[in-house]
Every structure is written in C-alpha cells, then in structure tokens.
Image 1 (tube, rainbow, N blue to C red):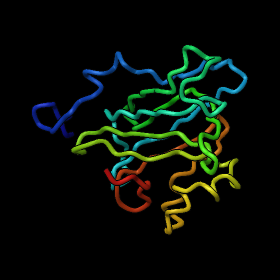
Image 2: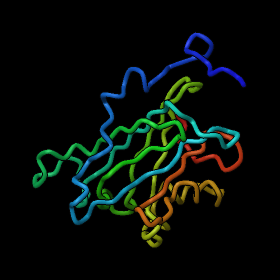
Image 3: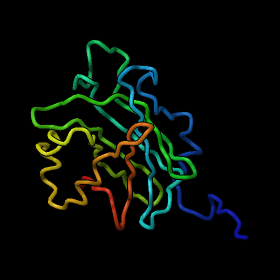
Length: 176
C-alpha cells in the first residue's frame, strides 16, 4: 500500500494548512428567504478531485449592487477551501443584474497547487436562459461546450458548479 505524500515530496502551496481559519463560504444566513447553496467540485485534467484548493467568489447583491445601502454587512465576497473530495460550498443569494445586458452571475477564482496564478471564470444561473443569451461574455464564446461549462446545474440542494481545470470538459476561463 502506497504511503501518503508529504509536503516535502510535493509542490505546494498547501492552502488547507495556512488558510483554514479564513474559510468564509457563508455570505448570507441560510434561513434567509433568498439564500441559495452554490457548491461543486474542483477537478484536475484527469477528472480527479483537487483537494487543498481555494475557491473565491465575488458578486453583487440581489439588487445588482456591490455596495448596497440596505445591507451594510454585505461584502459580496466568499472563500471556501476544497475538502479531500475537491468539494466546496457557499451559501449566498442570487445576484441581481449589474449592467443593462449582463446576466446574473458570480465571479469565481480558483487557487490550487500546480497553478502559477489563479484562474478566473464566471458562474451563470440556469433559470436565466433569456438573460444568458444576451450576456456579452457568454455571447463572445463560440464553443457551445465552453459556454455550457459556465452555467450551473440545478440540484435538490441548490446549484452545482463543477470546475474542471484542464482537459476534456474544461471550464471556460478568462485570459489573464
């Protein structure tokens, strides 16, 4: 039976060792009427889970504002660490429309070992088909599979947004 790898045998960073106290995946109270669970898995090029990754989100509030007058505690920012299965979880609200043609979306960043810099993507909502068709970012993507990789799936718990870092089924990422 193989022995588990140790930090001296692999390349870091090891986010779970240094950032576990920063896990802030709850942006709103789960009992709030518009609360939604957004979860998923971070997967590598072979489809294996990526443990020890950090997923960060930034979004507008339900009214489409980043600094709302009515919610002084709203930051629109969340951070979740992936577990051994590569799973992350946020409790948030569905963002409102920010611009005249923008569909509601959540900006997503992923930090993981093997990445020299974070990767950035967006998560769109499956119940916003009309708005998704007019969104300038989604409209700029010619490949239907890449476009589809940016739209979460409905589940019994809320929304599922898996992030595939490379390979077949890779999530669409912004060039940095």
